[in-house]
Image (tube, rainbow, N blue to C red; front, top):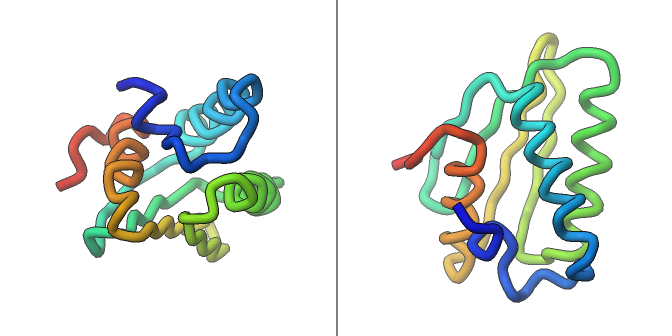
Length: 110
């Protein structure tokens, strides 16, 4: 997986900051991801293990990500033991959504 698919040209995050942001997402996936599903072609649902500070961490990350990649729509839903993170994109960015699914280690999500 290349960062090129993960970070599309439309991203406005400065190039030198991109590896740090990718590392933040990778750490979140590695530490908290319990399951991933694709309820719709243009939406992923990530279930993240809850716990101290997880909701705040996820909200901070998606707020910053939405600031540089406006094609994302994020919905964070805290639960008792899980945090649901829905990530939606428009049709032009479906490849980015697939790259996220692959990046999580879930492989092909379809």
